[in-house]
Image (cartoon, one colour):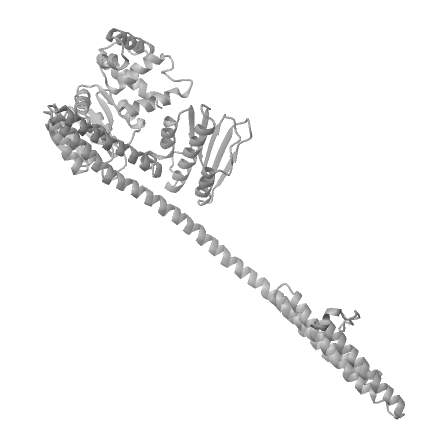
Length: 218
Length: 359
């Protein structure tokens, strides 16, 4: 697996490299700003780019903008955003820019090394890894009223979809909800049909379901 | 023209024995004068003198009385005048009237049959008084205009500097937020990474690993607290994506259903105005969650040539205190930008908080 990192703070950049190296993930290139990210994505064709939201020169949402552009230029590149803040709007924008792997995690999640490495691998493989706080916020936002695409879902199906958005497998969802894996599969099929998702391989449909979920955030 | 000689007729008050007031002094003066005049007239009657010499005694007495009365009048008017300029004119009038009275007295005493010679001095005194009054009025007029100009300039300066202070404060808060992000928050993130790595290396010693994990979670909690603090002082999404996105983000975090409508926000208002509008919505949503839990809230934002209008309406029970501390804080923030904040919360008809921010 090939990973690039865009992070302006050396302390965090080096920490990430060390953390990934300890888990046999090679960081092939590093950048300190948005332009640098575009350059290394073009040069190294990584499986996943780990990007800080705030990068020079503006220190606002430079990282998200650069990541969206990188995805448009190089479809299939997974993007894992690291942020100090939960802002579902960024995730929705990233998902809208292509259905390859997308992750959005609060920075402190990197401390839970196994979970973080798992998220990096999932995003590299085209899956999703949304922070549970992002998911919680979308869930509360989705209760906002009529016209909500998630209104058709049962409360249980909403729970399953939220866990799918975090990137959990059916087995992990079954463990979290204390139900059988077969029950989860039934809920997942029901979610796909209620959200009217086209028939395709399951992984892709999962991303589409998460995309629908994120759209509910407005 | 008022009479030059007031003739006090009231009897002396018993208290005047202790301290003689100005009116009592004049009465005393008149009494002594009349007594002296009468004594002289009586003496003249007894001595059978050919010329009526007490006339000059009476003349001196009346002259001194006129001067006394003039002084008293001038002093009284000066005291009653509403400002120094009116006081000066009043004193001038009192002196002029006394002088005219004395001139008339002299003319009468010297035999009123002849030419009316006091005419020219009386006219001159009147002219001087009129000139004084007119000049004073003109001066006040010009002075008022000059003062108004000074005040207008001062108000402009204060408005500008007040806005400058608000802008500087907002910039300072953004700087604090950036410093938190780049400093303490980043160091804590680096710390959680190192603790995470240590935890992984301690997999063969579960007790030590559990301690490291507890430390990592504690650092995570500190990061979360710093995040809430930073968002409270200068939400980054506001600077990044503008008011509409920031308000959407607030709506997402709200516990009840919140709708957001934004018009004209393709153009971004100045940062201080955005920030004030954001905190109006944030406070209004907090209030709604507290006092009208579960109520539907509608937020509207509209920007046009006149400025930014923000309205937050809920369909809760109403009856909010329009002078609560949260509202007072918002009002200060809005008024510092020359804006207006209105709260309407009739019992049973929901609460509306509206702000108008010129920009």
